[in-house]
Image 1 (cartoon, rainbow, N blue to C red):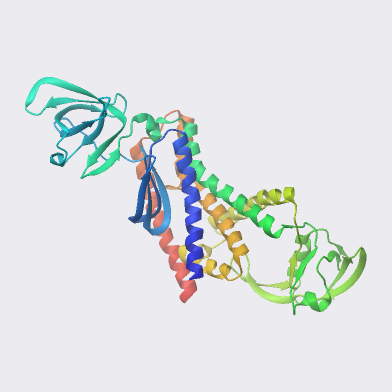
Image 2: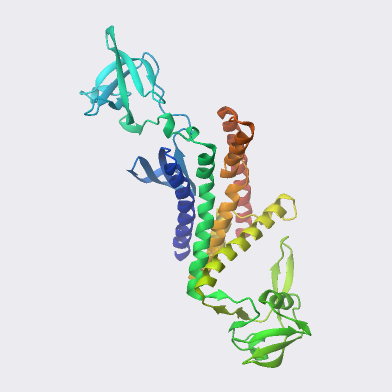
Length: 424
């Protein structure tokens, strides 16, 4: 049950912060945000605030922000349609009743001749059975369609995605991944405040009981300065030598209370997998890195850890694309849930670390220039900036639809791999 709660919290946080970035920058640019959704499929909870419908949906496989103009508008009034009009106190149209007009006895029913709800915001037409006098009505910019007793706010062109500058549209798309990186920085800073920042030198933190380090007499705050006549100055150099020498004697020179001492450690042999998924043996001696608390160092740690994790994920992604890493190494929701279950058992701080890493991963994946992803849509905006005009919406729509189908197929393959790893 703890894992389920942790997974829901982690998933909800990552999706919320990503979509929140899209929504905030859409609103800042003056776009009409129709819906902010967590999940897909049928609604299980919803409310409306400040023009936006907020929903939680049944299938926890992501989320979306629906901005006016990104999809064809829901209702298109044609000449000859009979509609009902309700008005504000100032006399402009506030509600356009598309059907079930009998349920709105106060609405003024007209036959439509001309409608412009993009630029001029007008409706022209005639009273039913009276075509002698042409009527013209000004429409309020925040008027609503009423279809099957459900209200949908109209979207004048200046509230639509396409009306905004290239910079505003690009920023609205980039804001989602950007917020994932900001979340990761924030989490790493929190971790730094709570547990401290890892020191650069090879300084011992906690010594685990019944391990080669304890048997050799290593103590917290010991600093390794030499291994087998090789000078050691960083924690990475220290761990690299230990990992590369399972079962081999290592003579270490330790700086303890400003005095040098020599200890001999034989790393235990442990099994793991390399970047290609092949099993390998590594050495372990049972020590944790030392930490220190520093205000400036903590913020620096947040940015550095985010940068290092980003670089690692991009490197692995490149190896996947070039075939150096098999597709079997990819994990979907099932694999992430299983990994979360293992992380939860190691403590809350590791869950925070795992959340930060997944947030960076989500940001990077969304920036990949693939159809239906933020990166794919940014690619089209970049092409528009170069050629001076946008690609036809129909062509872009087909590109994203086909790409989305391939992504769904990939998701099925990855999920099947996850299931095989778990149960077969």
